[in-house]
Length: 260
Image 1 (cartoon, rainbow, N blue to C red):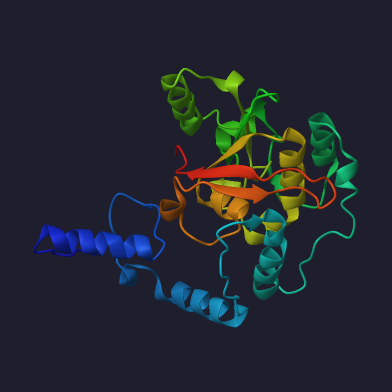
Image 2: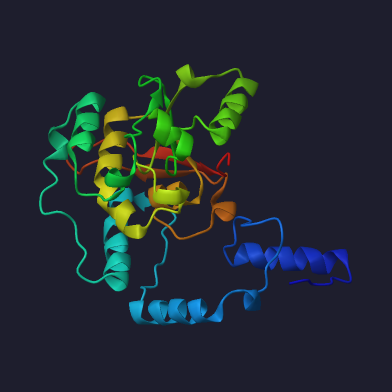
C-alpha cells in the first residue's frame, strides 16, 4: 500500500492519526495493504472478535493495580469461555523472600507456557537496588540462559545503563512473564491473568522505589490501561501494588519503549 502526501503537514497529520489510534510499533519495514492479507483469515478473525463481546474498558490514570484482574477476567471470558484461574495458587502472601517466590513459580504447573519453555526466567541484577525494571516476556536467548534481557535488546539496555554510569548492579530486572511464549509471540490476556498474582507478589517483596515498565504489555499491565505505549511513555504514575493490610506506599511507575 502506498500513499502520496502533498505537504509536510499532511504527513504529520497522518502520523498523528496513527498514534491516536494506538499504533505503537512497526511490524515490518514495508507497509502492507489490508487487501494483501488473506481475506478468509480476516473473515474468521472478524467473526471471532464479533462473537467475543469484548468489554469497553475506561483506563484510570492512577489506582490500585489489583483492579487489573477483573479486566483480564472479562477479556478471557469473552474470548475463551470456560477458562478460569486454578482453584488454588497457594497463599502467596506466605512467601516472604524472592527465593521462595522463585521456588513457587518453579512448582507452579497452571500455565502452559512452562511446558514449551526451556527455563524459568525469574530475574537478574541486584535484589537490593532501588530501581526495578519490568519488561514483557523472555525471548530465545533469555529462555536459553534463564536470565532476562540478555539478547540484542538486553545488550542495548546494558549500553543505556552504562551511558548514565550504571550497570546491572544498580538495577533489578524481571518480566511480566517468567516463561517464553512460543515464537516470541505477544503474551495472551489469559497468560497475563494467570501469572499476575506472582508478579504482584514479586513487586511487593522487591519493594522498589521506582519501576520502569519497558514495552506496551508491561506498561498496560502495571498501569491497568489500554492506552498505547507511545502515549504512556514518560508519563509517571503512582500505583499501589500492596495488599490492603500491609499499608505500603504507592510506587512510581515510569513507562518507556522497549529496547527492542
